[in-house]
View 1 (cartoon, rainbow, N blue to C red):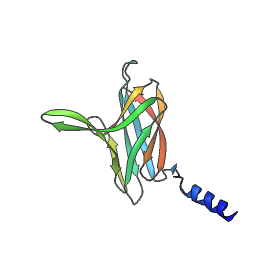
View 2 (view 1 turned 30 degrees about the vertical axis):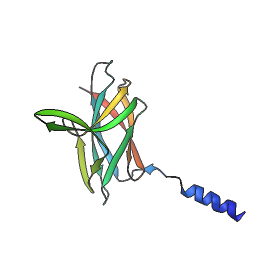
View 3 (view 1 turned 180 degrees about the vertical axis):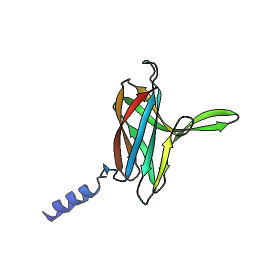
View 4 (view 1 turned 120 degrees about the vertical axis):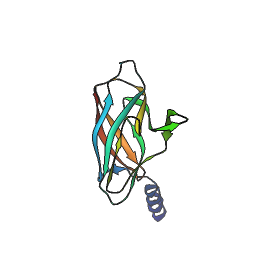
Length: 136
């Protein structure tokens, strides 16, 4: 019996728990309106981190997109190029804004809708869901 209890305690401790990001706030999540047949789109938003520790945005997902990647724009050889990022850092007690020609979210195989949810996941296992609005 003790071995069975020990086994379940070890099994239970191996799970990664996910929780709501209590110190992270999302503002102004938006996507420019594009033709309805456009399946690759960009999302912009602001992320406020009210904790005393930096936060790393590592993943984003939505039921309206097959894949969402973190991207940035860089000037290289006189041209603007997009580059995929592994994460985006939000400083402790700081705010970042994902915007055109800077860091942003790229949605692939996007299914058009006026407003839709996205969930942002952080390196510490926490997450937050917000609604993206399409605007002109």
